[in-house]
Length: 304
Image (cartoon, rainbow, N blue to C red; front, side, top):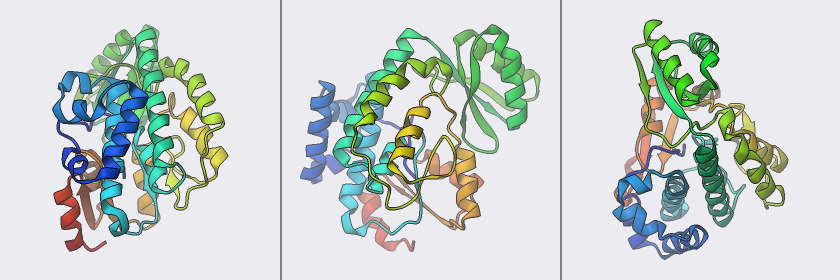
């Protein structure tokens, strides 16, 4: 499992960068693409700048790729890969569908397009905790009189993130509280990700991916849009474009993995967000986080 936006932290991957020349080469490539020293920003901050979409996404991808480089032959065999939103690019790189270089270029492009869409169509997101999927859908329908608002992330059985115009998201959060939600919290995000307000970013991403050398994945990658494996090059490209305005079906992805007898989970990249969700919703026998060199060194003691 590979994390997405909001998992970043200042100092992320600095130990990996210091110890592996191949990791430093990737950061150099990303910095050249961005026109910004992404290594310095990742390691030193400031945190507010690192939270900007066009920097956050490449920084998280680079961290996940750096862990894969550090693992080398010690990467355990795995039956499935998946990633939350942006993390799907990391999952595709891990399975050979994308080269590391292409993954970086694609994510730099994606992040730039999505940030521009945020500036053109300001929006917001809110986490709704303690209501069913059906109830959240009903709330979004009611609040849509105030603007665009849709479910954006089905994160777990008890947490759904909604996304849309600022007013509509506020209204939906208030309705959710009145309907008995344990929490309805406006999130500090740059825009309305995975909503129709991201539509302007789709054409640019489709154009970029059109001639991109994306291969069929060696191991099934569970797509965010369908919560099912996407293996052919054509299907992967189609779903990566659709992902920009479609909800992330993460809870459904975990259900798919459980139904296919997945009992061991490894989260690769910054933080422990996905591991926490897996602990609650998958009841996995083993859950491992690989964020730092220390984590990688201790992997030898983990039976997977």
